[in-house]
Length: 115
Length: 113
Image (cartoon, rainbow over all chains, first blue to last red; front, top):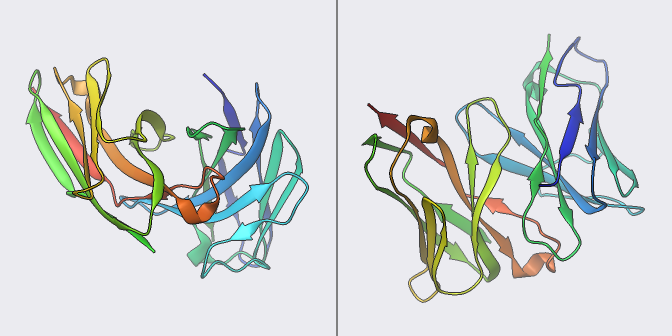
């Protein structure tokens, strides 16, 4: 099946700093990528939809200036958490779809801890 | 908007059959999907129903009834490795078939020996 990678898998940063998370589709071209956050024992909350070469579409309540998304190519999307605070600590997961497919392929996730 | 309801926890024994229900309120969707997520891992796709009826994939089957706003995931011959969280999800018509998914709250399945 299709493979999506995420980097880094874990990151610890200090309050006020920014963190970039990369999401790559390794063996297919992802026309659309999605970014989720997940708190322990909870569901996946969609943050934004990212299309190659265009601005991301953010879900209601998600600050676009805080969570910067760039989808520079058909295989790479990045999420930058700017001016991170402890409440941003979470599990961030990306996913990607292939054109015309309904299945989403998920990355392994990034555990962000802000101290 | 969309909302999907699932039981929070289900417990079953090895070898048994378990059904995880998903009831939804939605303004319209392309299909109902099911994903499995082991603790700390990535969700993985299990099944998809675009039309009413039963879809079978090995030990897993999924059912959809749009008239009843209801679906379920059926797991047969349960194995210990099936202990995980299971999420139903819909891709809303309003998303323009981008593949966007809205997830239910998830059901934690615990399989006991």
